[in-house]
Amino acid sequence: MTPYIAQLALSHFRSHRRTRLQFDGRPVALYGPNGAGKTNLIEAVSLLSPGRGLRRAAAEEIIRRPEAIGWKITASIEGPGLGHEIEITAEPGQPRSLSLDGKSAPQLALARLIRIVWLVPAQDRLWIEGAEGRRRFLDRMTLSFLPDHGEAVLTYEKSMRERNRLLKDDVRDPGWYRALEHQMAEAGSRIMENRAEALSRLSAAQDDTATAFPAADLSLIEVEGTPAPGRDALTEALAANRPRDLAAGRTLIGPHRSDLAATYRAKDMAAAQCSTGEQKALLISLILANARALKAETGAAPLVLLDEVAAHLDAGRRAALFDEICALGAQAWMTGTGPDLFADLDDRAQHVAVEDRDGESVARIEEASP
Image 1 (cartoon, rainbow, N blue to C red):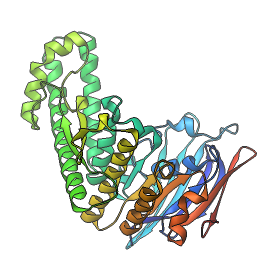
Image 2 (image 1 turned 30 degrees about the vertical axis):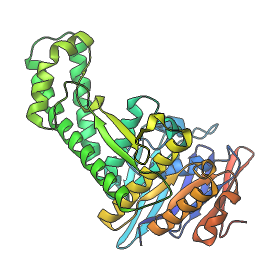
Image 3 (image 1 turned 120 degrees about the horizontal axis):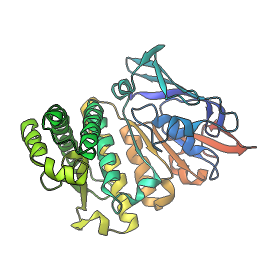
Image 4 (image 1 turned 120 degrees about the vertical axis):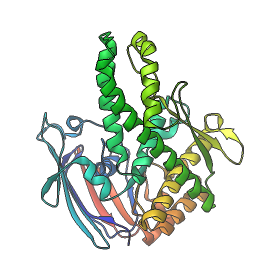
Protein backbone atom coordinates (compact mmCIF):
# COMPACT_ATOMS: atom_id res chain seq x y z
CA MET A 1 0.00 0.00 0.00
CA THR A 2 1.10 3.56 -0.74
CA PRO A 3 2.23 5.62 2.28
CA TYR A 4 -0.62 7.67 3.65
CA ILE A 5 -1.58 9.97 6.51
CA ALA A 6 -3.22 7.79 9.15
CA GLN A 7 -3.85 10.57 11.65
CA LEU A 8 -3.85 14.35 11.40
CA ALA A 9 -4.20 16.67 14.38
CA LEU A 10 -4.24 20.47 14.30
CA SER A 11 -3.96 22.85 17.22
CA HIS A 12 -4.69 26.57 16.77
CA PHE A 13 -3.99 26.28 13.04
CA ARG A 14 -5.87 29.04 11.20
CA SER A 15 -9.60 28.39 11.76
CA HIS A 16 -9.00 25.03 13.47
CA ARG A 17 -8.69 25.41 17.23
CA ARG A 18 -8.50 21.67 17.80
CA THR A 19 -9.08 19.06 15.09
CA ARG A 20 -8.15 15.36 15.09
CA LEU A 21 -8.99 12.98 12.24
CA GLN A 22 -8.06 9.39 11.42
CA PHE A 23 -7.74 7.95 7.91
CA ASP A 24 -7.35 4.53 6.29
CA GLY A 25 -5.49 5.37 3.06
CA ARG A 26 -8.49 5.93 0.78
CA PRO A 27 -8.92 9.28 -0.97
CA VAL A 28 -10.36 12.02 1.24
CA ALA A 29 -13.28 14.17 0.03
CA LEU A 30 -13.71 17.30 2.13
CA TYR A 31 -16.89 19.31 1.65
CA GLY A 32 -18.56 22.27 3.29
CA PRO A 33 -19.48 25.93 2.74
CA ASN A 34 -16.92 28.47 1.60
CA GLY A 35 -14.89 29.63 4.58
CA ALA A 36 -15.57 26.51 6.64
CA GLY A 37 -11.88 25.55 6.82
CA LYS A 38 -11.45 22.88 4.12
CA THR A 39 -8.44 24.48 2.46
CA ASN A 40 -6.86 25.02 5.87
CA LEU A 41 -6.87 21.24 6.35
CA ILE A 42 -5.09 20.48 3.09
CA GLU A 43 -2.71 23.40 3.69
CA ALA A 44 -1.67 21.60 6.88
CA VAL A 45 -1.02 18.45 4.84
CA SER A 46 1.06 20.43 2.33
CA LEU A 47 3.32 21.57 5.16
CA LEU A 48 4.38 17.95 5.61
CA SER A 49 6.68 18.60 2.63
CA PRO A 50 9.60 21.06 2.41
CA GLY A 51 8.76 24.69 1.76
CA ARG A 52 6.01 27.04 2.82
CA GLY A 53 3.05 24.95 1.73
CA LEU A 54 0.40 25.50 -0.90
CA ARG A 55 -0.35 29.06 0.26
CA ARG A 56 3.35 29.97 0.72
CA ALA A 57 2.38 31.47 4.08
CA ALA A 58 4.81 32.63 6.73
CA ALA A 59 4.50 30.87 10.11
CA GLU A 60 3.06 34.00 11.71
CA GLU A 61 0.19 34.16 9.19
CA ILE A 62 -1.07 30.70 10.18
CA ILE A 63 -1.58 31.43 13.88
CA ARG A 64 -5.24 31.23 14.92
CA ARG A 65 -6.73 34.50 16.11
CA PRO A 66 -7.52 35.87 18.61
CA GLU A 67 -5.60 33.40 20.81
CA ALA A 68 -2.25 33.90 18.99
CA ILE A 69 -0.52 31.25 21.07
CA GLY A 70 1.26 29.43 18.26
CA TRP A 71 0.18 26.43 16.22
CA LYS A 72 0.97 22.73 15.86
CA ILE A 73 0.47 20.00 13.25
CA THR A 74 0.85 16.37 14.27
CA ALA A 75 0.67 13.60 11.67
CA SER A 76 1.18 9.84 11.60
CA ILE A 77 2.49 8.41 8.33
CA GLU A 78 1.90 4.73 7.64
CA GLY A 79 2.69 2.35 4.80
CA PRO A 80 4.73 -0.76 3.93
CA GLY A 81 7.70 -0.81 6.29
CA LEU A 82 6.88 2.75 7.21
CA GLY A 83 5.68 4.36 10.39
CA HIS A 84 6.62 7.90 11.31
CA GLU A 85 5.39 10.64 13.60
CA ILE A 86 5.76 14.21 12.38
CA GLU A 87 5.27 17.29 14.53
CA ILE A 88 5.54 20.82 13.19
CA THR A 89 5.21 23.76 15.57
CA ALA A 90 5.58 27.52 15.42
CA GLU A 91 5.49 29.96 18.29
CA PRO A 92 4.65 33.67 17.79
CA GLY A 93 7.60 35.47 16.26
CA GLN A 94 9.48 32.20 15.65
CA PRO A 95 10.03 30.10 12.51
CA ARG A 96 8.61 26.61 12.16
CA SER A 97 10.37 23.73 13.85
CA LEU A 98 10.15 20.08 12.79
CA SER A 99 10.30 16.97 14.93
CA LEU A 100 10.52 13.58 13.21
CA ASP A 101 9.93 10.53 15.43
CA GLY A 102 10.65 12.66 18.46
CA LYS A 103 13.91 14.12 17.16
CA SER A 104 14.60 17.55 15.69
CA ALA A 105 15.07 17.39 11.91
CA PRO A 106 15.63 19.79 8.99
CA GLN A 107 12.80 20.61 6.59
CA LEU A 108 14.49 18.79 3.72
CA ALA A 109 14.09 15.51 5.64
CA LEU A 110 10.38 15.60 4.75
CA ALA A 111 11.16 15.21 1.02
CA ARG A 112 12.59 11.75 1.65
CA LEU A 113 9.67 10.65 3.79
CA ILE A 114 6.59 11.22 1.66
CA ARG A 115 5.99 12.86 -1.73
CA ILE A 116 3.22 15.44 -2.14
CA VAL A 117 1.87 17.11 -5.29
CA TRP A 118 -0.89 19.71 -5.40
CA LEU A 119 -3.06 21.96 -7.46
CA VAL A 120 -4.88 25.00 -6.05
CA PRO A 121 -7.17 27.61 -7.64
CA ALA A 122 -4.41 30.25 -7.50
CA GLN A 123 -2.58 28.22 -10.15
CA ASP A 124 -5.43 28.48 -12.63
CA ARG A 125 -3.77 31.55 -14.17
CA LEU A 126 -0.36 29.86 -14.31
CA TRP A 127 -0.05 29.97 -18.11
CA ILE A 128 -0.98 33.65 -18.49
CA GLU A 129 0.87 35.27 -15.59
CA GLY A 130 4.58 35.79 -14.88
CA ALA A 131 7.35 33.22 -15.21
CA GLU A 132 8.04 33.11 -11.45
CA GLY A 133 4.91 31.07 -10.74
CA ARG A 134 5.73 28.62 -13.54
CA ARG A 135 9.27 28.14 -12.17
CA ARG A 136 7.83 27.41 -8.72
CA PHE A 137 5.37 24.95 -10.26
CA LEU A 138 8.17 23.17 -12.12
CA ASP A 139 10.50 23.16 -9.12
CA ARG A 140 7.78 21.65 -6.93
CA MET A 141 7.35 18.80 -9.44
CA THR A 142 11.12 18.44 -9.79
CA LEU A 143 11.48 18.22 -6.02
CA SER A 144 8.94 15.40 -5.97
CA PHE A 145 11.26 13.36 -8.21
CA LEU A 146 14.62 14.57 -6.88
CA PRO A 147 14.58 15.47 -3.16
CA ASP A 148 18.05 17.06 -3.38
CA HIS A 149 16.69 19.65 -5.83
CA GLY A 150 15.53 21.84 -2.95
CA GLU A 151 19.06 22.03 -1.56
CA ALA A 152 20.43 23.10 -4.96
CA VAL A 153 17.78 25.84 -5.24
CA LEU A 154 18.54 27.14 -1.73
CA THR A 155 22.30 27.16 -2.39
CA TYR A 156 21.86 28.97 -5.70
CA GLU A 157 19.52 31.60 -4.28
CA LYS A 158 21.77 32.28 -1.27
CA SER A 159 24.83 32.75 -3.48
CA MET A 160 22.87 34.91 -5.92
CA ARG A 161 21.62 37.19 -3.12
CA GLU A 162 25.21 37.77 -2.00
CA ARG A 163 26.33 38.42 -5.58
CA ASN A 164 23.42 40.84 -6.12
CA ARG A 165 24.46 42.70 -2.98
CA LEU A 166 27.91 43.22 -4.47
CA LEU A 167 26.38 44.35 -7.76
CA LYS A 168 24.12 46.89 -6.04
CA ASP A 169 27.10 48.23 -4.09
CA ASP A 170 28.98 48.62 -7.41
CA VAL A 171 31.87 46.41 -6.25
CA ARG A 172 34.24 46.01 -9.22
CA ASP A 173 37.00 43.79 -7.84
CA PRO A 174 36.66 40.36 -9.62
CA GLY A 175 38.05 38.62 -6.56
CA TRP A 176 34.82 39.25 -4.64
CA TYR A 177 32.78 37.50 -7.31
CA ARG A 178 34.73 34.37 -8.24
CA ALA A 179 33.80 32.13 -5.31
CA LEU A 180 30.12 33.18 -5.42
CA GLU A 181 29.90 32.62 -9.17
CA HIS A 182 31.49 29.20 -8.80
CA GLN A 183 28.87 28.26 -6.17
CA MET A 184 26.06 29.66 -8.30
CA ALA A 185 27.30 27.78 -11.38
CA GLU A 186 27.60 24.46 -9.57
CA ALA A 187 24.14 24.70 -8.00
CA GLY A 188 22.62 26.32 -11.10
CA SER A 189 23.84 23.55 -13.38
CA ARG A 190 22.24 20.97 -11.05
CA ILE A 191 18.97 22.93 -11.11
CA MET A 192 18.93 22.97 -14.92
CA GLU A 193 19.74 19.27 -15.18
CA ASN A 194 17.12 18.37 -12.56
CA ARG A 195 14.42 20.39 -14.31
CA ALA A 196 15.23 18.75 -17.66
CA GLU A 197 15.03 15.31 -16.01
CA ALA A 198 11.65 16.17 -14.47
CA LEU A 199 10.27 17.29 -17.85
CA SER A 200 11.46 14.05 -19.42
CA ARG A 201 9.67 11.97 -16.76
CA LEU A 202 6.47 14.01 -17.09
CA SER A 203 6.50 13.60 -20.87
CA ALA A 204 6.91 9.83 -20.59
CA ALA A 205 4.09 9.63 -18.01
CA GLN A 206 1.74 11.51 -20.33
CA ASP A 207 2.66 9.30 -23.30
CA ASP A 208 1.98 6.11 -21.36
CA THR A 209 -1.61 6.78 -20.32
CA ALA A 210 -4.63 8.02 -22.23
CA THR A 211 -7.00 9.97 -19.98
CA ALA A 212 -9.87 12.39 -20.33
CA PHE A 213 -7.38 15.20 -19.79
CA PRO A 214 -5.32 16.74 -22.61
CA ALA A 215 -1.59 16.09 -22.81
CA ALA A 216 0.87 18.97 -22.77
CA ASP A 217 4.27 19.20 -24.45
CA LEU A 218 6.62 21.01 -22.07
CA SER A 219 9.85 22.86 -22.67
CA LEU A 220 12.20 25.17 -20.82
CA ILE A 221 12.99 28.61 -22.17
CA GLU A 222 16.29 30.07 -20.97
CA VAL A 223 17.05 33.78 -21.07
CA GLU A 224 19.57 34.81 -23.71
CA GLY A 225 23.13 34.39 -22.47
CA THR A 226 22.39 31.38 -20.24
CA PRO A 227 24.49 28.43 -21.49
CA ALA A 228 23.56 24.74 -21.53
CA PRO A 229 23.98 23.00 -18.17
CA GLY A 230 27.60 22.76 -17.08
CA ARG A 231 29.44 24.28 -14.14
CA ASP A 232 32.35 25.68 -16.15
CA ALA A 233 30.15 27.12 -18.90
CA LEU A 234 27.85 28.83 -16.40
CA THR A 235 30.81 30.16 -14.38
CA GLU A 236 32.28 31.71 -17.53
CA ALA A 237 28.91 33.15 -18.57
CA LEU A 238 28.37 34.80 -15.17
CA ALA A 239 31.84 36.34 -15.29
CA ALA A 240 31.33 37.57 -18.86
CA ASN A 241 27.94 39.08 -18.02
CA ARG A 242 29.24 40.95 -14.96
CA PRO A 243 29.33 44.39 -16.70
CA ARG A 244 25.65 44.10 -17.68
CA ASP A 245 24.76 42.83 -14.22
CA LEU A 246 26.58 45.76 -12.60
CA ALA A 247 24.58 48.20 -14.72
CA ALA A 248 21.33 46.48 -13.76
CA GLY A 249 22.25 45.89 -10.12
CA ARG A 250 21.19 42.23 -10.31
CA THR A 251 22.01 38.92 -11.98
CA LEU A 252 20.46 38.81 -15.44
CA ILE A 253 21.26 35.25 -16.57
CA GLY A 254 20.87 31.84 -14.99
CA PRO A 255 18.14 29.34 -14.07
CA HIS A 256 16.35 31.94 -11.91
CA ARG A 257 15.25 33.52 -15.22
CA SER A 258 14.02 30.28 -16.84
CA ASP A 259 10.42 29.91 -18.02
CA LEU A 260 8.23 26.85 -18.52
CA ALA A 261 6.35 26.66 -21.82
CA ALA A 262 3.42 24.30 -22.45
CA THR A 263 1.61 23.38 -25.65
CA TYR A 264 -1.76 21.60 -25.86
CA ARG A 265 -0.54 18.61 -27.88
CA ALA A 266 -3.75 17.69 -29.73
CA LYS A 267 -4.30 21.26 -30.94
CA ASP A 268 -0.65 22.34 -31.21
CA MET A 269 -1.68 25.46 -29.30
CA ALA A 270 0.27 27.34 -26.62
CA ALA A 271 -1.33 26.94 -23.21
CA ALA A 272 -1.62 30.71 -22.84
CA GLN A 273 -3.90 30.78 -25.92
CA CYS A 274 -6.18 27.97 -24.75
CA SER A 275 -9.56 28.47 -23.13
CA THR A 276 -9.82 28.73 -19.35
CA GLY A 277 -11.25 25.21 -19.17
CA GLU A 278 -8.48 23.81 -21.36
CA GLN A 279 -5.82 25.50 -19.23
CA LYS A 280 -7.31 23.92 -16.10
CA ALA A 281 -7.44 20.50 -17.79
CA LEU A 282 -3.78 20.83 -18.81
CA LEU A 283 -2.81 21.56 -15.21
CA ILE A 284 -4.74 18.54 -13.94
CA SER A 285 -3.11 16.42 -16.65
CA LEU A 286 0.35 17.44 -15.41
CA ILE A 287 -0.49 16.71 -11.78
CA LEU A 288 -1.78 13.26 -12.76
CA ALA A 289 1.34 12.67 -14.87
CA ASN A 290 3.51 13.72 -11.94
CA ALA A 291 1.74 11.21 -9.69
CA ARG A 292 1.96 8.39 -12.27
CA ALA A 293 5.66 9.02 -12.85
CA LEU A 294 6.37 8.95 -9.12
CA LYS A 295 4.49 5.69 -8.72
CA ALA A 296 6.37 4.16 -11.67
CA GLU A 297 9.69 5.19 -10.11
CA THR A 298 9.11 4.39 -6.46
CA GLY A 299 6.22 1.94 -6.50
CA ALA A 300 4.21 4.33 -4.33
CA ALA A 301 1.84 7.09 -5.39
CA PRO A 302 2.33 10.52 -3.76
CA LEU A 303 -0.25 12.35 -1.73
CA VAL A 304 -2.32 14.45 -4.12
CA LEU A 305 -3.94 17.69 -2.92
CA LEU A 306 -6.65 19.15 -5.17
CA ASP A 307 -8.36 22.26 -3.81
CA GLU A 308 -11.78 23.07 -5.32
CA VAL A 309 -10.95 20.97 -8.38
CA ALA A 310 -14.26 19.12 -8.75
CA ALA A 311 -16.38 22.26 -9.14
CA HIS A 312 -14.49 23.27 -12.30
CA LEU A 313 -14.99 19.96 -14.13
CA ASP A 314 -17.97 18.61 -16.01
CA ALA A 315 -19.43 15.31 -14.82
CA GLY A 316 -17.43 13.23 -17.31
CA ARG A 317 -14.04 14.69 -16.43
CA ARG A 318 -14.89 14.63 -12.73
CA ALA A 319 -15.63 10.90 -12.93
CA ALA A 320 -12.42 10.36 -14.94
CA LEU A 321 -10.43 12.21 -12.27
CA PHE A 322 -11.86 10.04 -9.49
CA ASP A 323 -11.19 6.85 -11.49
CA GLU A 324 -7.60 7.95 -12.17
CA ILE A 325 -6.94 8.67 -8.51
CA CYS A 326 -8.40 5.37 -7.37
CA ALA A 327 -6.41 3.48 -10.01
CA LEU A 328 -3.25 5.15 -8.75
CA GLY A 329 -4.05 4.08 -5.20
CA ALA A 330 -3.24 7.62 -4.07
CA GLN A 331 -4.53 9.22 -0.89
CA ALA A 332 -5.87 12.28 -2.69
CA TRP A 333 -7.33 15.14 -0.63
CA MET A 334 -10.05 16.98 -2.55
CA THR A 335 -12.22 19.88 -1.47
CA GLY A 336 -15.62 21.04 -2.69
CA THR A 337 -18.67 22.91 -1.46
CA GLY A 338 -21.09 19.99 -1.39
CA PRO A 339 -21.18 16.19 -1.06
CA ASP A 340 -22.87 15.85 -4.46
CA LEU A 341 -19.57 16.72 -6.15
CA PHE A 342 -18.06 13.51 -4.74
CA ALA A 343 -21.07 11.20 -5.13
CA ASP A 344 -19.29 9.14 -7.82
CA LEU A 345 -16.60 8.22 -5.30
CA ASP A 346 -19.09 6.65 -2.90
CA ASP A 347 -17.26 4.28 -0.51
CA ARG A 348 -14.04 4.43 -2.54
CA ALA A 349 -13.23 7.49 -0.40
CA GLN A 350 -13.60 8.81 3.12
CA HIS A 351 -15.97 11.76 3.23
CA VAL A 352 -15.30 14.61 5.65
CA ALA A 353 -17.86 17.31 6.41
CA VAL A 354 -16.37 20.63 7.50
CA GLU A 355 -18.39 23.45 9.00
CA ASP A 356 -17.89 26.69 10.87
CA ARG A 357 -19.26 26.87 14.40
CA ASP A 358 -18.96 30.29 15.95
CA GLY A 359 -15.66 31.04 14.23
CA GLU A 360 -14.16 27.59 14.76
CA SER A 361 -13.78 24.88 12.10
CA VAL A 362 -15.27 21.51 12.99
CA ALA A 363 -14.62 18.41 10.84
CA ARG A 364 -16.21 14.99 11.05
CA ILE A 365 -15.71 11.85 8.98
CA GLU A 366 -18.69 10.23 7.29
CA GLU A 367 -17.98 6.85 5.75
CA ALA A 368 -20.08 7.52 2.66
CA SER A 369 -21.40 10.70 1.12
CA PRO A 370 -24.83 11.53 2.54
